[in-house]
Length: 222
Ligand code: ATP
Image (cartoon, rainbow, N blue to C red; front, side, top):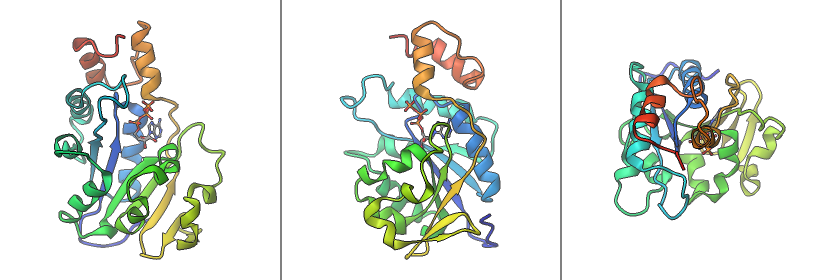
């Protein structure tokens, strides 16, 4: 496992829609923080243009739910950087922002699920990410049948070398993509939203503070 003795702060950036945040986000984040000795994991609700997905609640609600979900965990925080940035918001700009606060690319660990990582080729300037930060790709139920080698975007595979000891791929820049097995919790925001819509219980799928917020604010009813 990655345990450099480096005085500089290693931080995890965990981007997601968080519509809503659930235990399937929180428990894996906790496990990753411990395993990689991260000083902090920053949850970053991403900006979703209103026309893009009709069932995404406002940025304010998604931010508020994460804030409530992580309360009491001193290693977790939430950033509104992608929600307040004027104009279009791109993850590469977020990473550049955090470079200034850490020791640079080697100290940033971008956390995401296998399903999201497979879509990375759709991100703006995606090849730049591989030299701008490390990645921690977590397993997610239903996504384990994809061979690790097939996770890398095809036009970039020649830039990586597999490192079996560390269970990662090393980019020519020195940044790494770690594949990490987290406790498999088969929970998704999609299922939670559909349960709320159908009047079903969401208890034990989300933290109580998030459940209460959804009820109080009457979210996801239709
Ligand atoms: P939706 O069902 O609306 O697509 P989601 O449950 O996938 O949402 P996101 O906010 O899109 O949640 O996820 C943020 C990140 O967390 C993504 O990288 C995703 O792969 C990862 N993730 C979400 N749920 C899980 C889970 N149960 N286990 C591991 N990773 C997860």
